[in-house]
Length: 190
Image (cartoon, rainbow, N blue to C red; front, side):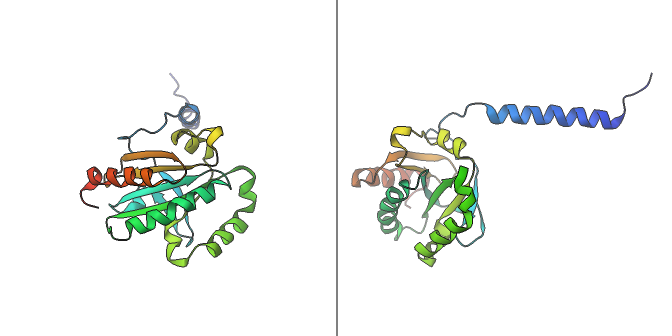
């Protein structure tokens, strides 16, 4: 009995594994729910350093303020200022503004990144993570709605890496209070 050529066996294995990976990637994603682990998010800080969430939270409670359109930038920024103030006295809490860009925007990566660096105070460059790609994945995870495409999409990540609070929409004092109330169960007095 002659055994198959090992190259063919390896090739078949690679094809089967690759097919399984493509199949898994094309499966519909379930939107995030409170209690779910926050999925791995890879991007780049404005400092140029690689960013990985939830790893970059370093054991802190973290608010992720995500936007998917140019207009959503203004809604995210409207959230960022009161969040900065609310977190100023909380050493165990941080936040990340996360523009998620894809499609034709990728062609302007250098220009867009440079503009964001110029428009963001240097002290906050490690609070902005640009994600270039995976737009459809993040839209599905964050409950994206075409009718609310210019909204901010927020997720509070607890110290355990799990989602503690989700929100979509413009800034409101009530929503900020709800988010702050969700911090306590995520890791004590943050």
